[in-house]
Image (cartoon, rainbow, N blue to C red):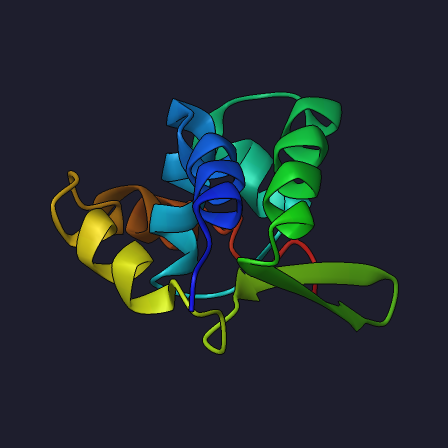
Length: 110
């Protein structure tokens, strides 16, 4: 059972525009920091801080692939379905992901 304090921490962590955008992207695929930098047009340190906050509430996972770390949503998190529902009500991010592919920047980390 979810406690009020856990729910509060979770909502605080995701209740910020940049983190909501990151979560929206991660509902589509896993991404490395450099790809999120391109998608969000923000600095790498800033993106890393947002990712750190999302890792603290365990809604995202990281997977090391060589020298790169890829981030994805934690499908085992008790609030995963809530996150999917929430992001389904937000503007889709598919166009930006597609432009990343078209621009040849989707494969920077391979």
